[in-house]
Length: 328
Ligand code: SAM
Ligand code: SF4
Figure 1 (cartoon, helix red, strand yellow):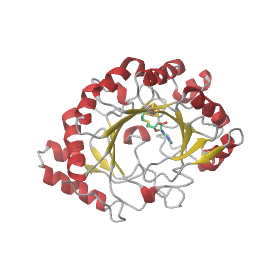
Figure 2 (tube, helix red, strand yellow):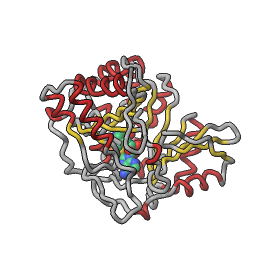
Figure 3 (cartoon, helix red, strand yellow):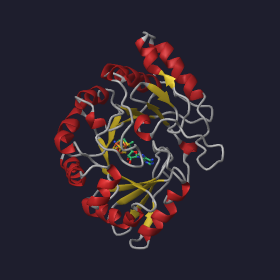
Figure 4 (tube, protein in one colour):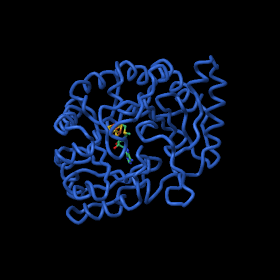
């Protein structure tokens, strides 16, 4: 028997994001500074057993149905398929968000271990711009990683694209065409104020409406039925060319439907990407708290979940941690 984990606004938690590391082989400009971001010491990172314990509690006790592995770059965590196997055994919809660089190497093992879906991040199809945006000259490896994911049988494979006005906003249509040709769903993500450098500015956000208008001007598209708790709004091409998604965090906040909680690589429980408070589950696990005590911490944190982020309000407070540290 599971009991719903419900916040004070009646939203039920069904989805868990786990950052398995804060480390990354890229340094995307909208996420991390070129240098100077200190990695967490290894002993501060949750072990696979600690991750499994917390995840199992959320799944078995509260009916969490989906788990997404993220980071940092999840594939830089050694022996990732071992963790995947442990979490897949919980019977959840297990997915991962990755920069794609290790998929040629790991896709088959991850699939065999029980990973069901992958999202690969790719913001540009131009080699120079890719090098500027990620500070790494790895476009070919990422493109090959997307192919490797499709070949390994992941379905669907989705491609996450963060659009930053003045940087890659001229590529919306080309990326949409890339998705049509490769048979992958492109998910455009509005640029969020979670860059470590604090350079986000509202004027750099290309809105969902602008993205959809750009694609719609070249391809007839229609909006698909409401997304429920999923963060993306979706459209389908009327000619059968597939679907696109847009995650409009800034211009059409979807906080009212949020069903998600997060665990950072160092075991901090967060009820929102933009939360300013965290609950230290790592401390609870390491001091030997039993499941009842940990469950109480989780329930209290969820009960206190706020109505939503206030990016568009003057009183918005940026989280002190960046996207890579929280787990995007
Ligand atoms: N390293 C993996 C990757 O890049 O896919 C997983 C972690 S990354 C933080 C997760 C997602 O967050 C990626 O799709 C990335 O593009 C997105 N992201 C990072 N910083 C962002 C920002 N400031 N605004 C919007 N999305 C961002
Ligand atoms: Fe690394 Fe992903 Fe952040 Fe890029 S977006 S720096 S790949 S964690």
